[in-house]
Image (cartoon, rainbow, N blue to C red; front, side, top):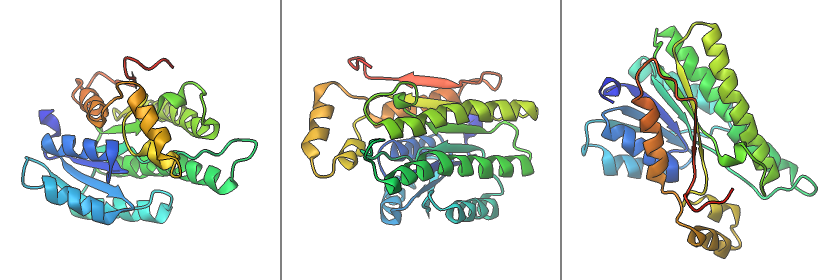
Amino acid sequence: MDRWSDKVAVVTGASVGIGEAIVKKLVGHGMKVVGCARNEEKLKKIALEINGNGPGEMFPFKCDVKEESNIVEMFQYIKEKFGTVHVLVNNAGLGHRAPLLSGKTEEWKEMLDVNVLGLSICSREAIQLMKATNVDNGHIFNINSMSGHRVSGLIFYSATKFAVTALTEGLRQELRATKSHIRVTSISPGVVETEFAYRLNPAEPSKAENLYSSIKCLHVDDIADSVIFALQAPAHVDVNDIYIRPSEQKI
């Protein structure tokens, strides 16, 4: 990881869960990390907690990835403050119980806006900045899901994650066509104990509690460690897909 020390990373959805864990890991390895999310208060609290305790530093930035103007503004800030970017972690994502037969259109749109379009816009802006500043060894991460490889339960959410699977490989192919050495990695977790299930079942928190107590779930640090694993691979090694599930998870 020494070659990433003092380099610039962006992590979306950084105010909680997997995103927060990834920010902390990258800062611990000496990176300058722009952590973005809608909840600026939480971001500032995390920065206050970790800055000064390690070799790197977190820079909170309020950004709603549903809004293209927010994303463009964030990358303009990065360009002005740091000059370039080296790593992007597309972690922001959400799910709704919105069946195909009865789901609300606005919930489908929100999943598409965050899980697919926000991810794509962030990737485009990051790569354009990398290319404009001659960063040819950057790395793009998409925090996908096992739901991006098999359909189970949340159908429309799965559809957005299947899109992430296709977008990751498509981005890799487009980069190779331009002779770029920027690497692309999809990380697909199974059940991770986060706020996800609670947000999915706001009126029935017992559903989340039952899920997370049914097996030994993954911890957010397990996913953050997967990012570090792919980042520290030699430059000629492109780790494209990581599937990571609890040992007890069946599907």
